[in-house]
Image (cartoon, rainbow, N blue to C red; front, side, top):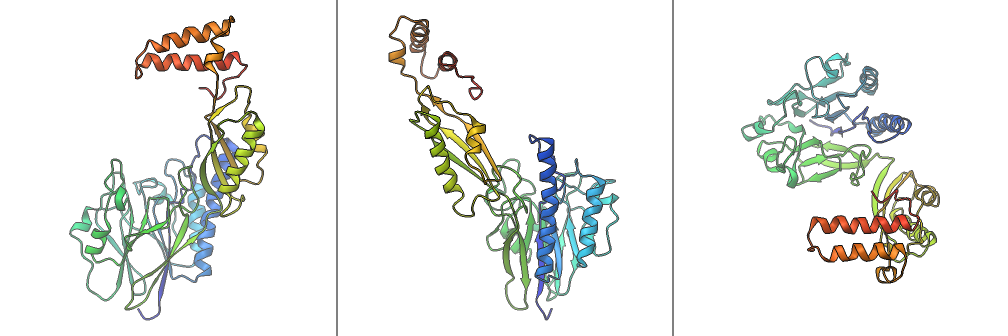
Amino acid sequence: MSAPVKILHVADVHLDRPFVGLTLDDARARRRELREALDRCLDVARAHAVDAITIGGDLWEDEHVTPDTCRWVADRLENTGLPVVIIAGNHDPLRPGGPHQRVSWPTNVRVLPVGPDLTRHELDGVSVWGMSWGTVPLTADTLRTFSVPEDGASHVLVLHGTAGGAAFNDGAHCPFTAAAVRNAGFELCLAGHLHAGGVRDDVVVYPGSPEPLAWDETGRHAVALVEFNVGTSPRVQLLDVNTRRYAQTVVDCDGAHSSADVERALSDAVSVAAADGGPEGLCLRAILRGRLDPACRIDARELAATNPGLTLLDLRNETQPAFDLDALSGGPTALSSFVRDLRGRIEECDADDAQRKRLELALDLGLRAMHGDDLEYAT
């Protein structure tokens, strides 16, 4: 290898994801965004004149992918004119008669076979090794005994699995360690499966999913540009490609007397969340918390309308009315009688008694109903 060799690594596009819970139109729009995300990744490859592309699994979702999407992918990869090496992940396993085998892949694309053994693919002075998921869970056990040949090439592993501190938690997919990658002689592991981009222990490179796919995916969403030079360690750059970014915030509404106070608290929280990248592309989940004056009413739709510019504002109302139980229980009304009765029964229960919790909930819901609350957020 004389001139530098550049590889663009992509993973976890999850094409044709169903996006359960969204409306049909919103889910369709999000699937279209994932296609656009893959196009942006390939545009980065062209802009940086890379020599090859690797795809680290979960290119699509096997249960939902359509034949058209598979053919669309093959067309896009062929148009790059670059060598493309693909491994299958746990969401798009390589199985007999499955989508990978029904695609007429162009000659520049190679899908590496199912593990547990590693398969080698030669580039110009760089050897790419990898193995695909199949119909049974993949393991990285082969790394314990594997050693790259001493042939002067740079050796890189492409693997879809879980590295780092979470590797051996319950439910981890294909757990492995950075030490195992190094001990096998690889300069880098270009990984897939974790959706937050980052480089772990200087050897495991996760680009992350090109777009965040769920509310907890608040990390980086990128492609990895890797440059191999003779005599030096590979140079890794993460290049962000996402158009959406997800964030969550808790809005302190404690003491609010009216919806105006809640609006101000929410507006301040939105401003803080949007401070880094602006409102465009920001999907914000705002959780409203605190004890409010019982007369304060929160309409999530109206509140969302007061914060335009965000791609999405998802409001979760966890506030509670601040009832003055002493004052409410002191009168001659039916409401007072209700409060006295429930409070007395609650006091007779132990602090950790399940019956006490049910009575406290009954008191809260009863007070809300008697104060005209429609209880939409009290379930």
